[in-house]
Amino acid sequence: MKRNIFLILLTSMIIFSGTSKAQFLEDAKKFINQGTGGLSEKDAADGIKEALVKGTGESVKFVSKINGYFGNPEIKIPFPQDAKDIESKLRDIGLSNKVDEVILTINHAAENAAKDAEAIFVTAVKNMSITDAIQIVKGKNDAATQYLAKTTTPELKTKFSPVIKAALDKVDATRLWEELINDYNKIPFVSKKNPDLTGYVTGKAIDGLFIMIAKEELKIRQNPAARTTELLKKVFGN
Image (tube, rainbow, N blue to C red):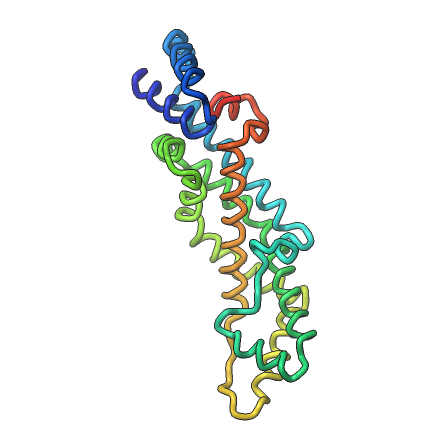
């Protein structure tokens, strides 16, 4: 058991702290000398959980503020890809302002809905096994993000969809979208369309959340200043 914990610690040092070879060996010797007082598997698991709660909380806080999506080129939600011909034709007939207004409102809808994601993430983290946590410690730089994507995306879609729908209604995006589609469908010789706006915004909102979570995970793994608690420092290094 002690050997397994020791191997986990060595792996953690390599992945998270960017420790020099000399310092790495010195830390390893310290761990051996500490005996049962060293880092346990539970410490490692608790550290990962704490990092995930911190990272997801920061990500949700960031994207759910005003212009959290709209003001960030990495996650800004554009006009639906499968409706690009709609956007192009509407801009061609002088409706660019209305198209831009729709883009603004769908991003605001995502911002309104995102705040409800934190509770889903926290539940997933609490239910994480020690084995899962250790695999994340030893995994790639986005291992935690991938774990959350795998375990929470179905529930996020279920919970986000009605919230996104309500948010779209709240910021008037639904009416604007319907007007825009009606304007498009009046254009001669075009195929009538009505893309699923709620489904589209839900998917893009979730994608944006995971992009920001991955950035927070990388920050905690690579930047000692981001390890703001004693447990994070113990697991990931000072």
